[in-house]
Image (cartoon, rainbow, N blue to C red; front, side, top):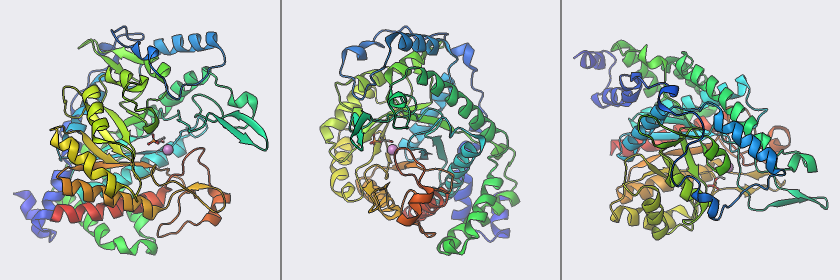
Length: 492
Ligand code: PEP
Ligand code: CO
C-alpha cells in the first residue's frame, strides 16, 4: 500500500499513519456531498406549524422589555420575510456529524466571543477568530485521532442572559446590557433602552459574518497546509518549547500525508458551522422556516442553537420552543444539575433519542466537576440515553481580579477540561468536545499562559463587553494541552 511505503519513507509508526488518515475522514469524501440549495427546501416566510407559539403562554425568562410594541411588530414582520441564513440540508449534515461525535467517532470544537458586537464584524476580526479555531482544530484532530467538527459561537451570538435586570453606577440605575441585539453597552438611558430594530441589525450582521465565514472556509484560506504553517509560526516562540514534541509529530504527519499523496485539493475547504444561544425567542421564531422536503420547522438563524444555564427550566418557554424545531440543540448543565433534570431534558428535547440531536454542554467549574458530573453522567448512561457530552470550561471559572476585572485563569480552565475527561473516561462516555470563549486578537482578559497575562495588562487590552475570552495564543496553548491529554487517552 502506498501508505505503508510512505510510512517507512517518513519513518512513521503505523499508529501515526492511522492517526492522520483516520482523522481526515470528514474533510475529504464526505464534505463534497451536494447540499440542496435553500430556496428549494425552505418555504418563504415564518413557519406556520402547530405548537410554535405555545411558548408564549409559558414563563419566558430573560425576556427583553421592548420600548415600543409597534416597532417590535414591524421588526418581527421584516425578519419573518428575510432569507434564511442556513440551509436545512446543512443543519442535517451537522446533526450527522454530532451523531458521530456522540458515538465516539469525532470531537467537537465550538469557539468564539461571549457576545459578538456589531462593530466587531470586520474582516480582520472575523478572519482571526476563524483562523484561531482552525488552528486549534488542526492540533486537536491530531491529538484525538478523529475528525473535529468545527463550530463558531459566531454569526448570531448577540443576546446575553443577565443575573440582574438593572445596573447601578455612581448612583444612576439603568437596564443591564443584554447584548447588542437588545440594547447598547454605553451607560446612557437611550443606549440601554431595549430597541427591537436591533434584531434586524443583528440579522444583517450575522448574514455578512456568515458570508465571510463561508468564503474563508471554502475559498482556500482554510487549506490544512496553510493552517499548519500558522501553527509553525506560533511554535517559533520559545515560550512554547514544551509542545515541541507534539508539534514535531504533527509536522511529520502533514509531510507524510503529502508524501502519501493525500488529496490536498479536497483539504482546501472545511465544514464550518454556526452556533449561538437561542435566548430571544421572538427572533428565533421569526427566523423559523419549514423545510419543504419534510414540512418540518428549522431555526434558520444558525445551524446549532443552545439553551443557557439560566433558561433551561423544564416547563419554561425556551425548552418548549427548542423541543419543536429540527436543529441539533445544546443545553448548558451547571453544577446544580441533577440526574432527574438531565433525564427530563432528554425526554422533552430528544424523546426519540435521535443520534446527534442533543448535546449537553457541561459547565460546572474546576472545583466542582469531579464531584458533581459523575452522578449525572452515570445516571444518564444507566437510562440508556446517549447525548453528546462536551465541556464548557469557561463559565464555571469566572472570578473577579483584585483590580475589579472579571477574569478566568487558564489553569482553572484546563483543570476543568481534565476533570471532564477523567469523569467521562471513568464513566465509559466519550468526552466529545470543547466549548470555548475565545478571540483571535491579542487581548488581555484571561490570566496565565506560557506568555503570561497578568492583571496589569487589563487596563490596556481588556475589550470584551461581557465574559473574558482566551486570546489567540492562550487558545492555541489550550489546544496543545488538550491534544496532549487526548493523545495520552487514545494511546492507552
Ligand atoms: C454563555 O455561554 O455565554 C453563557 C451565558 O453561558 P451559561 O448559560 O452557561 O452561563
Ligand atoms: Co459567556
